[in-house]
Amino acid sequence: MSNTSVELTQQELEAELDLAQLKQLVGLVEYDEAADPFPVTGWDAITFVVGNATQTAHYYQSAWGMELVAYSGPENGQMDHKSFVLRSGSIRFVIKGAVKPDSPLIAHHAKHGDGVVDISLEVPDVDKCIEQARSAGATVLEEPYEVSDDHGTVRMGAIATYGETRHTLIQREVDGTTYDGPYLPGYVAKTSTFVKRDCAPKRLFQALDHIVGNVELGKMDEWVEFYKRVMGFTNMAEFVGDDIATEYSALMSKVVASGNHRVKFPLNEPAVAKKRSQIDEYLDFYTGPGAQHLALATNDILRTVDELRKEGVEFLSTPDAYYDAAEFRERVGEVRVPIEELQARGILVDRDEDGYLLQIFTKPLGDRPTVFFEIIERHGSLGFGKGNFKALFESIEREQDKRGNL
Ligand SMILES: [Fe+2]
Image (cartoon, rainbow, N blue to C red; front, top):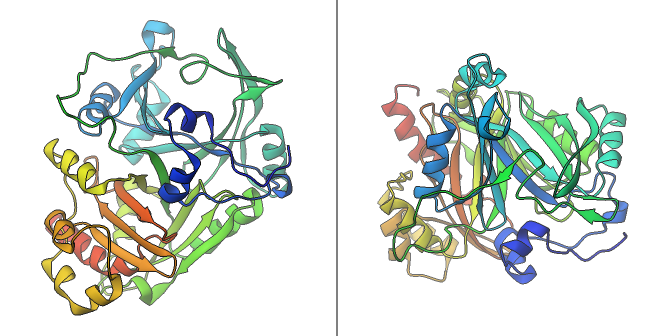
């Protein structure tokens, strides 16, 4: 099992991605899995609980170009809720909504609104991970168990992370056989009647780069330690206090990553400032800690943003001043497209010693000012846009102010 070379996951193979592309897209690195106390292959699926899964699943197809691949619901014996599985590249989203009036999803949704309940990770050995998690003091929510259907067997377990978020750990190869169903036992393959526009691209994003967690004031270091101690993650980069403060709003952020860097978790906490930060606003409206944004990796951010705008997806605006400043030109230097192309779309740029990245953030996806997406195109940089935080936060604050929450 010991190797230091990273291999493509089943999801990446199905998405026809290659290793060189992934190194560029998400900063994948080689590492020694045998020395890892909690080996993580990569993301398995991101599960959202929403108020109306039927319509949300349509939104991810129509606006975000995702493909429906599997389903579970009353028609195949799942009476409690409907669950739609959507793919784009190597990413899988699972969208769940309650059917029964007494479904436990209703209470969850009433408290948190639409949001991420489960960041599932694919692991080669679920028992090893659960044992490591327990001995490191994590809350084990589900002991390892197996589920099977005609497509094979999957072994799973689950641990708790911040708030009411969990990590389900999924082992898709059991006794030498890899599960070959559309998602998990209990799900049936499903495509929809939705038809993409003529000329619509095959997909708008290829992979998931990182998921940011918002935690309470004073809790960031606790969760950084959790990921290091329990899951063997390492620090990637660090931003603190003044680095990302505006006049009114500040936050602290640190980043941890799995051995191969497929899974990256920046963790934010609010910092004291004149007014409530965007993290405070999130914590109020999500009712506690949770996933703040998911960064979707693309190799053509201009096309992705243009297509998303055509479908009505709204992005945070970037002040023209951001692009005009001499200091910006100096900081960013040459990138693959003229600055005017970026400015026309409000795309942000950041550069560090390894290269640069292009990024843009959507407005909140649902009714509450909580979860949103980032679109990211990396060119060597392994950062998260530290140099853009100030410009970004000023933009977010304008929106927060419009809602009366600043
Ligand atoms: Fe991000």
